[in-house]
Image (tube, rainbow, N blue to C red; front, top):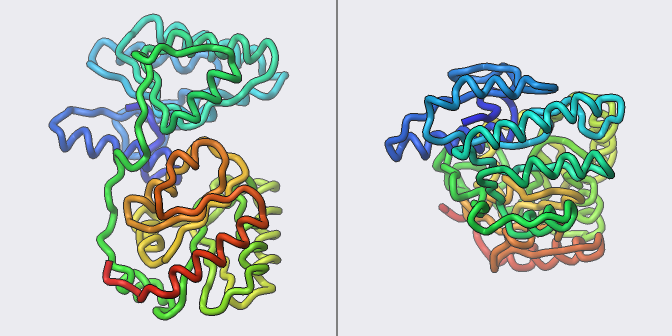
Length: 338
């Protein structure tokens, strides 16, 4: 398994860890390679940039399957930077060589970049030779094929929902979770949770929740910056300012461990995913695992992840209405022991 891994703060790392746990429970022997030299792994390697990926050739003969949890940032310096285009080309050719050398490789496509022009034309060719590509939703595959003008054979594609590999990190009832987090028992609680990044759209949730003018409901935005750069800091400051104007909106700035993540979701009545850009959502997968409905933006593969109890929205006006409708529905339910 090639993946970031705990204790690294990474959603894909949490996904990879649960995948490993599931495989080992089925009797498989699994070794882990981290691409960032971190984590409780068997091989802590640096696989990012130029030809570093080819280190995997040393391991291929000894394993029956090689699963790569793929996010472009694990393996490329920056494929969007023109000044790094030769390094990007080198990494792409290394992927191509790796795929041609071994048909036992599976790539779980968490996020693949849409590169422009000739750079994108070269980048797409490595995927033409990937032995197996695993998508979370059909929408992700369709958009990817449409952008790069390619077509995967169905025999080389698999669909795997986030919650297919998810395990519960804690067993909490809503009552016990609220008691642990010191949250009010009698209020309807909406939750945005995850790393603080603009594309998560937490500002949309705060603004819409304020406009919805809800009685008996509160919104909690819980998370931390994964990368503490200037852009994310400006966004965090913006969220602080937006939340400060409302007594029933709370910004909880804290890294959320796997156990705390499940505790927050268990404590909530509804999870809110107001993303402006996403392939698919691990948060949505955990909400489904823990039996919580969601208010969900219609971007990427999110509509495909939605169930009958979830509410989809596109515009900010629809988000306001979604908060109002969900509050009316949830206010008739008592805090549960589930």
